[in-house]
Image 1 (cartoon, rainbow, N blue to C red):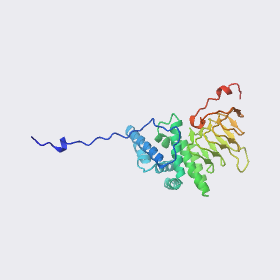
Image 2 (cartoon, helix red, strand yellow; image 1 turned 90 degrees about the vertical axis):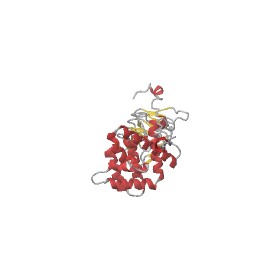
Image 3 (spheres, rainbow, N blue to C red; image 1 turned 30 degrees about the vertical axis):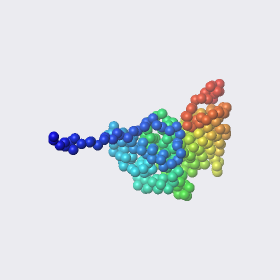
Image 4 (tube, one colour; image 1 turned 90 degrees about the horizontal axis):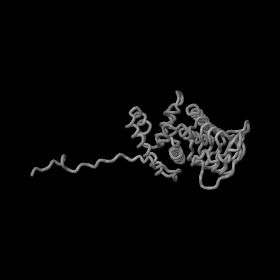
Length: 303
């Protein structure tokens, strides 16, 4: 009996299956803040980037440089933002170091990054993956840059904070003052033309569409911008002016002009805005993205 060749006849190593992308596993809301959540999202981003690099060779170098060559989500984001916002006089290496240091020193910034990615993936049906949001959603990128500018503002590094605001406005067409306080789980859908003033405050799990203004009423000084509660939905082209309060779970209809407080779970629609009855239940419009449930009550109202 001839001895078998172990290299030919011996047990062969088991082939590993490619990592599952789990495209349908999308949390309905941001999970509790922890390192495990960041690691899970980062693993999804890398898997998506590998898949896209294999499927589209024209993007392979970009995806390797921006995602696959980095050890963590915060370094990938810092690299991408630095290259987006740099100029001939504001160097990408300087911006990269600034973003990396800020994200490393402030865990709440990293938690907000993850919450914002989850918000876009769960609320926007056009968001095909976490990597798509990280790389291509200018609203997401503008928010993360503003968070770093907000840290600089608090550190009294205001010249650099304002310079960063200016670059974000030029590159992304989103103008958010670095002093504005923004919660986590924010979605800027489309984002073009969004303006948020200096003393504005935005709660958690808010969704804002394009061409929304959270502004002042003129030359007033001090605390002069809107305060937006948790779970609020603000439709496209809406304008909210002055130090008014928009209660948790409220909804601002597209194109509305709001100059008054809006109670929680109430819809404001029209120019000037008319308040429609409050809504009971657990639904938060900022998360459900329900833009039209007020239509039946509003149909007899003319602008």
